[in-house]
Length: 343
Image 1 (tube, rainbow, N blue to C red):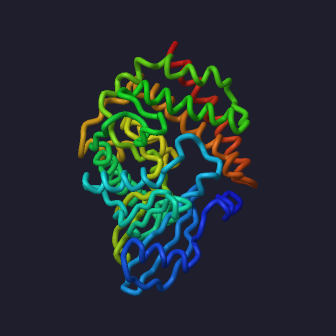
Image 2: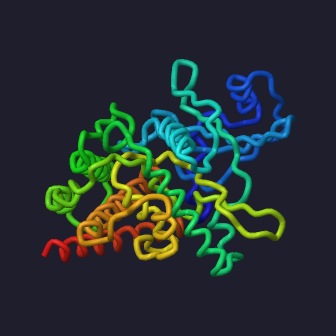
Image 3: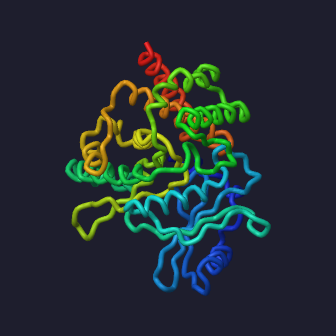
């Protein structure tokens, strides 16, 4: 990812040491800030590593101001992240501990979230040093963790913020709302699509019977790519899964949707180690025609989200060029997969 993909600083209020120290005192009482360091990697919320005089290392995340253009599902994302981490922790998954969540208000120009820091390194950063045996073991551990995430059942399907209108009592209804919302965003931001919008909007109706095979609103991280998976080790010992971070994109729906976020590690449904780890915790149906249709739908959805967000985020340079090409090919290819599955 190029530096040009990082959002402009005017998207996020505050963030300097004095502001960080003030928020820490608001959340924790009288604590001393030794150092605050901006963390890279995020393309929406800003994050700062706060090192305290008592030795604690915390992460302070700040959302853009409400006036900053965003996709329909991107309001109150830090509230979603706080919810995900709390629910996942109860299910036995290693995640940051939520210390404080502050929604926007009269004296808060943008919501913010304070979390504990998971020590270690991301899978993405450690990848070059992993042996095949390391990777196999880690994929097994990851599968088990994702099964624990999916053991959490939500009150409804879709995004966990009813005010957005992107939830429903069944998965076909919720996914239809989610997909059509991002298509409306594409129209609002003038984003060209590689497949006609009407054809994409019709997909949930064409495959409603496949979406209806989902009968429980399972918790889904949906962004568990290698940059959001933390690994750690003691000395030169074996790597282990240190935890999942950045649960802001979470929703309640089909557990299979989780596998789409893992695509940078390879197609998860064909990964024997990951699937074995998952099934060591919970059963998972065979990846049959219905499952493959749903996976294609979710791949269309994620590629649409990534393609559309590039306009309000003002991505530039090599990353923007790559994303434009990749998302166009991805959407067209998965639409063709769906045509073949329907035939």
